[in-house]
Amino acid sequence: MREARFDDGCSLDAAGLRLAEAAEGSLPAVDRALVSPGVRCRETAAALGLDAADEPGLAGLDVGRWRGASLAEVSAGEPEAVARWLADPSYAPHGGESVRGLCDRVAKWLDVAGQFEGRTLAVVEPEIVRAAVVRALGAPEAAFWRIDVPPLTATELSGRAGRWNVRVGRTLGG
Image (cartoon, rainbow, N blue to C red):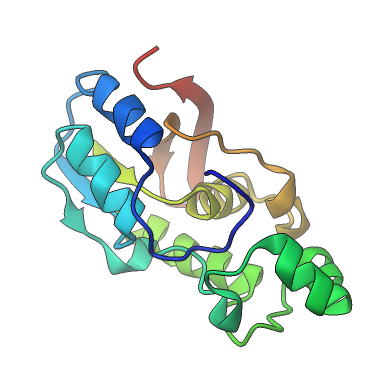
């Protein structure tokens, strides 16, 4: 992530692509690989050498009309809306999806994924990881913004739907 910008559909930058390519081979064997439909996720999956299937349920947070704008730009034009959006998980001033809605969507995906036999790997945006951790741990949605997800790190969920264990922060390729 080059700057605090809402997804703009752009490709990975050269440095990000090199890091993903360098991490190829550092992932465990899996029974299925999935990828968020976002451009950077698809490019990351390819650079990691994965033959991953698109999974629409793991699409990044829909930020509506804020898409492509920087956080600084939106904050300058709509400071009250941004402040409330960051404080209230049910609020979606941009006309897209609320954090609560995202967490609910990811929880539904986790329920289905928890029924799959074998290991699943998913290449996703940081907000999907945050939502999965919030729901897996039964944490309040207000914790969403307090979870840092560095690029090219693995977050592992083990267990089953309704009872997940979480392991965070393993750097890929390192």
